[in-house]
Structure formats: C-alpha cells, structure tokens
Length: 85
Length: 141
Image (tube, rainbow over all chains, first blue to last red; front, side, top):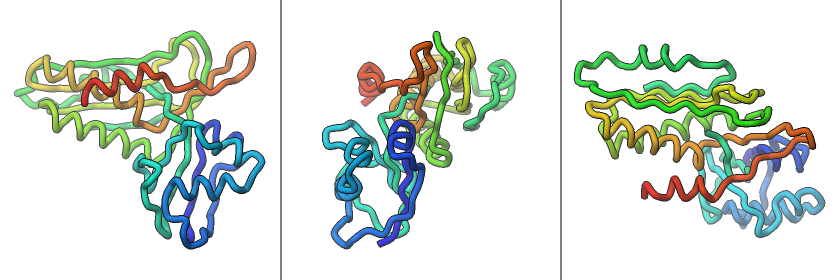
C-alpha cells in the first residue's frame, strides 16, 4: 500500500526529511501502526516518533486521532502540537 | 468570507472596509495578534492550513450569527511587534461578533497547523504548545 508521508517543524528537522513516498506492508492500517512502523527504523526515527512523545497527525489534511485508518493514496502528516496564532 | 495565509503584512483598516456591506450588519469585532519579544519564523502546512481555518470559520458560523468574516495569518520570518494574525467578524449585534472572534482565535491556536521557531540570543528553539491554549479552546465545548 503506497502513500505519502509529510513531516513538519521539529519532526522534519530531526528526521532531515520533509516528505516521502512509502510502501507499507499489509497490516499497517492506522496512524498509530504507521508511527510504530516508522519508529522501527531506529536512530532519529526512534527519537522523533518516540512513544509518549506528544505528536499530532493528519490524514488528507484533517487532524485525526491515532486510531484513524489510513489507505493507499492518502496524504499523511506527522507534526508537533501547533503553536500559531 | 476571506481566508488568507500569506507572508506579507496586512492592513486591518483596509480589511474592515472590505467586509460585506450587508445593511443588516451592525457590528464588526476584530483581533490582531503581534509578535512579542523575539524574532521568529513561522512554518505551516500549505493546503491543510487554509482548510483548517475554513473549518473553524464554518464552526463559528454554526454557533453564532456570522454575516462576514476575514482571517489572515502570516508565515515566514517575523520581527517583534510585527502583526501575525487578524480575525474580523461581522454580525448583526456585538455579542455574536465578539464571541465568534474570540472562538476563532482560540481554535486557531490549537487546530491550525502553524509552528513558531524563535531566534533567541542563545540559539533557535521551537515554541512548545501551551496547556493554557488547549484550555482556552476547551471552554467552547
């Protein structure tokens, strides 16, 4: 299952990456599962996406909860809690 | 309704003059947010930002009489005292205009994908989200 993942702010800086196309194994079907899958890359990924670290996620530009489903072709994003205004 | 995410500065007077001329509008409440203390860079998520602000404005329209509304949020490099954000809400009466304006600002703080990075004498740092902002947004539930 292919989808696009975007990273913003401190997450983008820690990963040294702002976007990637990713081909996920079957079974990685939620935001939480994707986060675990990416964290398993280790190094900066383990740190930036560490369990217990407060992160927000969006699917197709809508903010979602960790249990939200993801599907092929989605645009997923990970970022820290927002600080605009 | 006008939503703009832009690098350029804005002119509140100009924006208010350009609010709808609907004759039943009796009040326009506005808010301008400024950069305090330090230089900063604002990053955002193009596409999602406009969409998120649009959803916040729609929610305000569902709760109060909002006859017109302008929201402008800047991104990029900003200096102390620069304007960052403005909200102007037009309504029949002031109660709805004040409430919707404050609601939109509170929700912008917790739902619109912007991130501030401050440049301090000690180096740069990402601003941490504040629990007080979540509480401010939470009181509208």
